[in-house]
Image: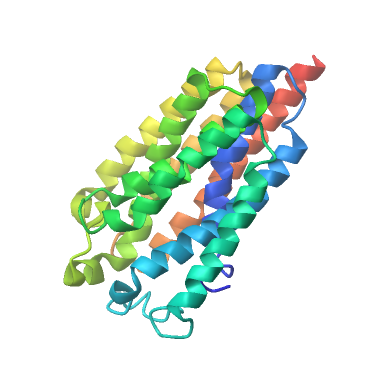
Length: 284
């Protein structure tokens, strides 16, 4: 269970939220009072399982690096509590559960979901070769922004694509905050990150990334037919992101972790507003 980070639910929350946003804007576009409840449940189970699979895969590839980083040296594979064979078996089990979730959707959504595996598989390797591993995390963690719409309509349109791009910017920003916890250790072992790349310019980079996220997500909401309540929720989301930028102190690891985790609340505020907007429009 520690391989799957079951004790740290923030990871699956952040993977889940773009799925739920996408299902919510699909409900608005389709004139429904609320997102498909069955799809919301499937996304929840899928996010928990696939986040666990991603963490397991990451630990398999990084077991030697993890030993050299203070925050990660007690991970089960790095410290020898779990064997490589057991980790691989657990990875396969989680993948099979994820597949069982995926096949509940339509054929287009199934194909779209399978395509995401390419990014998931290569992401853990990116910190060895590029200063932008957070971009690849964004590509993987934002994929649900496409899946909610694909599950509802069996196709993709501009709205979910813009939602996906906005979510990628959001992920790059919040994971940059997270990566500042390991900045010094990463430098020692030669691991790259946007935290190291931006360094003292992190606040300015976050302003740009968060602004892009709000604009792109807002465009997606408007294209899907979102009205006043959805835009008020977007404004609350933007205000929360601005608060993070103001509060940030990259030398304070505990604060960086707290700000990173707060993105769950920001995302839930936006989801709640999208659902309420769908309900009000459907009842009008």
